[in-house]
Image (cartoon, rainbow, N blue to C red):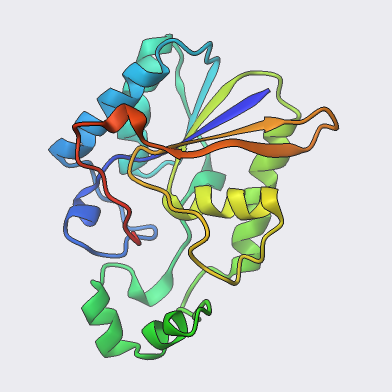
Length: 207
């Protein structure tokens, strides 16, 4: 069993440097090129299912992958990005101005509290549900999601403390793959693979 995680391509929110959360942005032209390159990279894989966050930036990235394999996209609410609260739609300098405790916490290597956020335990509970469903599913699956979701899955699999941010970079259209080991436990086969994006600018951003 394999779970191939793909972060969405560059979105309008990424290009404008804003934190997105649940805000619904479409892909830029660069994002569409990244999505097409990712579909070509995965064309030779025996993919049987394509799941996607219901946000437009993820669905648009999933479309060429699903089309290449002749399957329908299955929207999955559990793959939604973290609901970041009041900082959604803000740029880093605006966050620093309105909520100075946030960059101060990052400067100490700590995870800050975001006003109005979903809550990490709630977020991790829905991520666990996705992981549990995948572990019981024999099909080779692509899941198109968001940086926060893919990073959270990596923290979960490795058992690292998710309160300490920044352990896992997730670029636009970077590919991370999870498999089950001989004991049935998920492990990371590879993480944030961007080789298929050579010659196409990619970015690792906080949105």
